Image 1: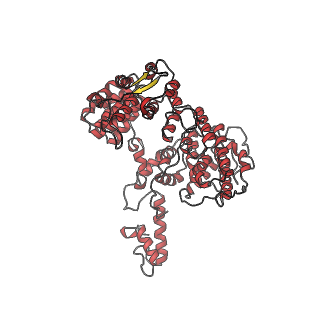
Image 2: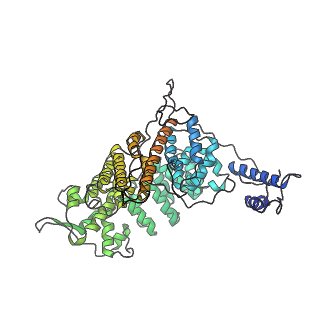
Image 3: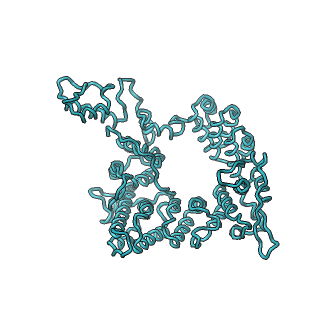
Length: 580
């Protein structure tokens, strides 16, 4: 068959098929072929080309061979499982999910486990993996790590997958090592912007001083937008040795560059900027001991002088904010938290947070301390500002929103984080816990898993609207420990519906718990399929309740390292691939 030209696009094929070949016969194909057969042949060729990662084009020089991937191959059962997960396109389709697991929502966890074992992706799955990552940004880091160098090779052949080149350091180019000084200098002087950003990031990860010196050598000649991106790369390997360069950047003509430099310096408690901010904050916040009990008094800055602006304080507040309170928040946020222990007579962080604040300034002061604790990753202050999870106001003294609480929790150790969220759920239920659950390590610790299941059971027994808990139920499917499946067996029966409950709620709850149990069993099977076989050890069969059909499974897998799993996010829906 002649190669499809401009008249042989997929759109033309679809149009001819809709109109009928008797009304619009294809203008291409082998002579003597019937029109319907020629049309189907052309569609088959277009589909094969699409799946191969190539666009129809005139003959050109053959591409270079795909690079080798030296990593071990997936076990056979795991490779079959990956194909099944990629073939599922029901995620995000809307409507009632039923009792079947949402396979696409299990793909991130499968990828994380496969990457932890260091497996290479089967070559025939690379197009489907790249298509999945194209539509979901949350999949991209794990997909590109699993797909390896061959994914970048394919991305150069198909414009639909160019996101892989943008996500790869330097657009997938090979970066020189710090020992090759001449190659580093040449790439920094002549490379594309993405290559230079990638080079600076790689140097900061291995030799921070070399990366900083390289940036300083051309700083004066860089464009403002480039200086901003380069400066942000200094977050990697940030140390006190970077302070002189960052102090110089405080005088930059770009406001955004100055703000970024100030933000980096405020993360160094021993920097001169932090000391200046500590002096300003101490002048605004003091302890009044004249009354019956000590009280914090606040006097915000009277003006935003040039020194404050140079140190990153933004003079103009957002709409609806007062100028002086806006300046106060920025000054307190940038001051080292260690300032306040000496300022308040050696009190502990818990004692300081518990002090009353005069004249209605408590919310502003505590919100600034929250931001400082997050920026400085101070566990003691985060713990004090969170307060007790069982507090009646459903939050600590300084947690002004669920988002702030989630950020404060990130500074705590995984076990303490899970225990705090479990206590919060036990007191306040699940209605406000979704963001908090998103920062907890996976699989959830036993106390947290019990708290979530108990809260779901209470909501079911209370006749609550089940649809309002679908987000938490989806998190539980991905984050509960599969070993706790047996505890859920008692929740599979359809409960008796209360008179004041939503119509059909009992059936929905039973269906949702059935899907939860089925998903946990499937996760257990997936983990065992990904376990490398032990040399000389016989394969241990799976329990009958979780044994996959026709696929013997190796022994159970070790639990992957804990990581926080945020709720999945998707890009705007992409137009469907016509050829697929």
